Image (tube, rainbow, N blue to C red; front, side):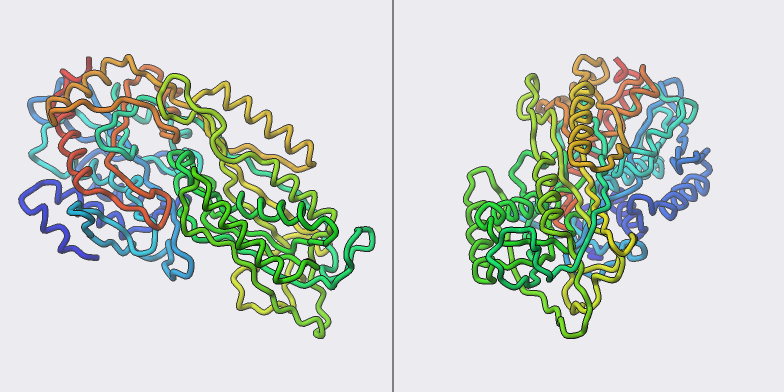
Length: 539
């Protein structure tokens, strides 16, 4: 950790925010692995004599008494989530379950940034937690009575917020610290759901020609296709900026092969693409057998990748689509197992039918996505039988085999977002119809409502005025196409007045994530101004 980067803020209380962030970054906190950060937060509150409590969802609230001259001000909730998206560069040995993040302070064009070494940084939402704890630890910041609310599992369905009961907090105002653009006041967000498709599908000897298929009759040889080099990104806020979806690109390539080589056979062995429901997948791969020649496959892959990169709306210049032969020694007697030609075609047709990207833009808010979907994760699971005889020097194979010997399970995770609850429900019904058409089981989980924009809020207007007085320019007021817990809070606390603010976080949910520290300091200054303005900020 390059702690010398803190020297820039000697004499500024923003240094205390960064110090807290560094400590948070030493604690593992992937979604569903938040026990350590939860315990640390409890200890933080109790050691300082603050009333601290935890609920059944491991949400934490720390109650901070008001400054002496603000005891009669209304209680304000400051809120952030404890979990982070855990993504890393391929081949990086970092263990998110045990290792501290390796932080680096860097400068780009004179602007200071904070990054992590080959992993996500977790500024989403570690910087929000750091703001809150720095306020709590300070004896000089004027503020009303505060409730510091730390919620769990935001990144995989806002489950901590959804489990929150009405008696856990009492504040009438809430400042969510989970948005990612300084100078922007968020007054609405998308809702969403995670959709899982599953189906058990018969498998057979991969290298046996399908006698029912009309083919050129050549030998079936094993290959791997890997789509990589993509930037990925947040499946909400980055869905409209031309980031390639590795799963979609991979499926498009096989659709091209099926169209151009109808007399040849293709039989898929294993599919592995994407890592998380809320991330645009950066890498996807398929192992398969075919009688299409190696030269033809490689030529088609190169031309296909170049065609995609040449599209005007595509912003992933390092995309590669690579074909390589797999070494499968038939003489050892092991049978490589795959889906049949017919089942491969059925799977391809289903995956091609799963929509991905922007479906509709907002008619009332400029440049805001209203409805989108992300083909996030594709996996095959099987028993160890099909793995035998294949050299294990290829990372395209894994050892997760969970079904009976004659079948292999296909799992697909699809995330859906919408700023309109009615459109969200309509799209959910469409996905249910799609699963029925292709005979997949479907499960809808982590569903949460949108926070429909509240641009007329007096609290929002007061905060906008404070921004103008503090920085001499107007704040942007908008909604975002990402899920904030405010949408869930609206159901539990219908009269609560809310805004969301945050610094510039670039590349969230990817190993390229970085925090603009100049922006982060401005948010810190702004937050302190809002807090000391109560009760006048309550409209």
